[in-house]
Image 1 (cartoon, rainbow, N blue to C red):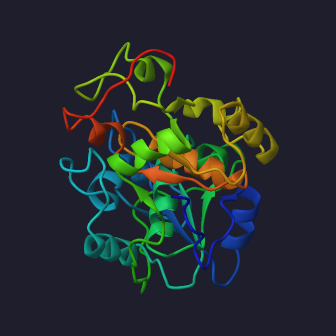
Image 2: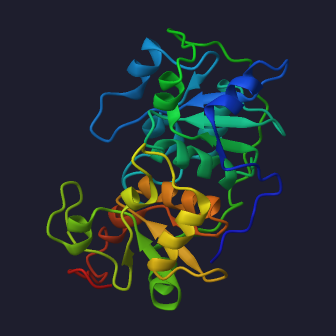
Length: 286
């Protein structure tokens, strides 16, 4: 159940200074803005107000995931739709991509994971996102950037994807991390999905524990300590889920940065509770 590495895996994170230098090169990386919030407003509005120069925008809900329903609130995208969207924003075969969001890293991590899932491993997340870029006084531009048409081919299936059955098995035989906040894990509240609780056997590791006070991922050695404290050991099968597979993608990014492997339950809790016959656990214990 551990995801195999992409053939062209790149560095998971890139900092602002490195990205600025690379953007000044004759053939800079393709930069994609994927700002998104579950509560809104649409990220396209913030993009048009100002974005990293040359960056194109992708809509997580409309272009990077399938329609809500079977498979959860943010299921896998249709490959043809995804390929068209990636080409529109300039993604090219064997050419590096940098993705960013407002700064929390979750939407960017989902696009990072999706690109690796379709075989484009040369992708990095801007550490700290747009907030880190502007905090350093880097230039921004308004409007909509015109990207040169890309030629990427999507090859779905390059990463292992958990479903309800394999997630349940991983909770028994490995470590399944629940990236939601404690009250949702314990079943005390559920603001989005129709049923509260967690997958039996899953270990709660809220996404906030993986970032520092500046909102950026902890250094690799600190990430390894956090994961170890939640039962994750090197070589052990690990998976992650959240509400709909966005926050958990950030957990997969953190695992990768820590030198560990992990698989994403793409449908996550929104898929798990779609079948009333699946068991539900509550309380603070797996």
